[in-house]
Image 1 (tube, helix red, strand yellow):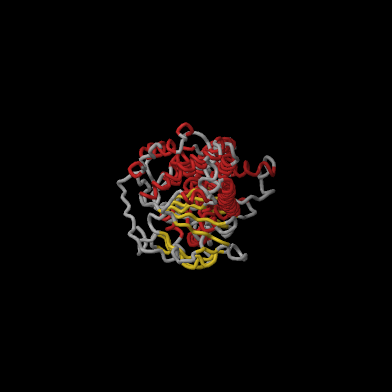
Image 2 (cartoon, rainbow over the protein chains, first blue to last red):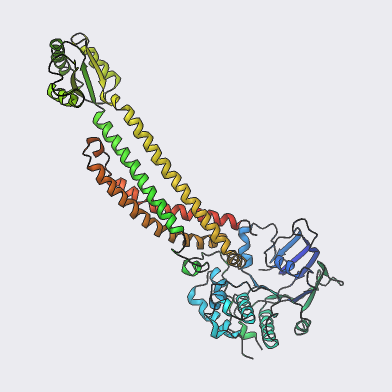
Length: 252
Length: 311
């Protein structure tokens, strides 16, 4: 289910301020297509984290309109938001793993919240942890994992449910270059399955590694869009999502 | 590079329940190590004792009322013994004729002497030195209403002018009033203890919420509903309340049995009417279950209230 024009997300003149302070985001307008790969960049304090909070429905804007999957999520009753959140995958900058759960249980959490049976989740969770190189740490608690390992668990948790949109905040910040590349390939594979990917990063090298990606640059809370391509992106055929395909099918 | 896992679209798109031990594991289960079960145990024990007291008093009052409701006393207040005895005999004969009277018993003088002996000494009523009224116990066919008492007075007016007719329940009215006050007190105690238990659960739930805020936010952002998250806390608190309730019930029952034996040893007819029946025991046994219900409801309302502050 996407919007009228097949859009995943549409921001229209969105502004955000915390309390009585000045706006941390001002007049932000853009559209995310299904199957798009977007990098969100900007200096520290530019508003990237605030923008991501709006994208993963942790925050309502102070003004403007946000439509997600064709629905105005600003006026949506809060008891309907969980269904939208279940269509998102989020990699938090600080990982936000549940401290007393094992790596396996952390990755299984979105599936359990969504009602997947225990018998159905063991295989995908084990394989996902194997993919991120943590098959030997299934029972490890986050406190016993290194920063990079925690980050990989966080990424595995975000993608395990094959979300419609993946939002990742500095997802490769704590891993070595080889693992960073591997994780980026995972995001690309998900993207080829139809998942819209938004990655906030400082890493300029990362931007060059996804040729078809679009760059959203924030500067002091304003989205730089000199050509209007982000607000009015050229129409292109929406990528059809084929639920029968798996990550393994698309990965080359 | 190794191929990624076979990752099918697995996320169910419905607000299905999320419960069970897997859900409960989301918050650390410090079962029986915190104060909650013991607070609930004390509350349930006190509630059990208060409720048993209230029910016993209720039974006592009911039995006493039933025994006395149809009883009346006729006193012949006449200083001259000869005249007193004559009026008593005449009254007995007249009352026996009335259709509302079921039985009559003239209280023997020996019995009156025995009653008065502790105060007046032996043989005090040997003559007319201390004139003691003649007493006639009348059992009516129905409650001693004003109309029935008036009928008794009417029948005695001509033949026993010194007669005074009273319902026996009138003498015990202050006792019944005191029992009623004690019953209200027991009820108030039960309500206060329930409120205190709720307050304790509220504080425990808030503390658990505060200690697990990060986990709750994660579950919330992963699409967990308020009801799903509240259920996790309900389950944890229900377990504590169940264990605490069972311990409290055992303590309360122990106290009731000890008190019951002590009162039974008094041998008083009135106290014997305060025994607990099967329904009373059933009500007492339901107290811990009510405690679990109150604890779960309080936990749910507390958690839901806190979650509503999140987006």
